[in-house]
Image (cartoon, rainbow, N blue to C red; front, side, top):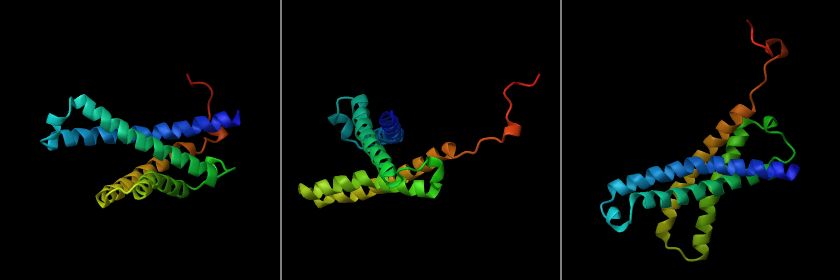
Length: 159
């Protein structure tokens, strides 16, 4: 039972991270379609072009969300979310967001990628870290809200 709850939480984080990245991919794909003159002639359709960008960026967000979730589960083992300071959670989000670009950079070094691919990875790493930190900070808000004191709770509506 505990494993299924943890896996469900990890998948929720992964989907939560993939959603904004998918939207960023669609926006960037549309921007590139409109501003780059030779791209529309090479691609079959705008929908295919946007879908390719959505899948690529959504996968980056999914990997980033999995990284954040696994890092958080390992580093903060045995603690409730409410017990962890929001700034610390945002820091874990930033570190987890840097993981995919660093992984891609290391794979590029191993397989001999040209040096021109590393500058976009730096920009992608900064964007990923910023988005992951902001997402983690926004996720902790509802989780850490205090409940109302008993005197302010009402079970029924007043007439």
